Length: 102
Image (cartoon, rainbow, N blue to C red; front, side):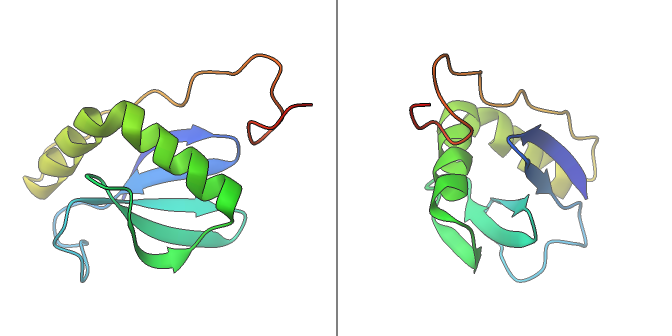
């Protein structure tokens, strides 16, 4: 498994060839405080697992901004090549931990 990004206590990772499990669809694994889900890279749809709504929103926002890099990481992992880390979400001014007003 390779970690792609880490922000707001969220870890987004991808598995290498042979570790892909039951999802053939390009996807990432999202972990946060004991919660886990697999999200489709193209749509952000939850393939498996459950995340709190604010965490799911941030993970989907990251995917929307970094979709092409996440897909490139998926293809590299499938080919057994090194995976490059992807930048996290940019910081927000005047926003709390999950993007709500403080």
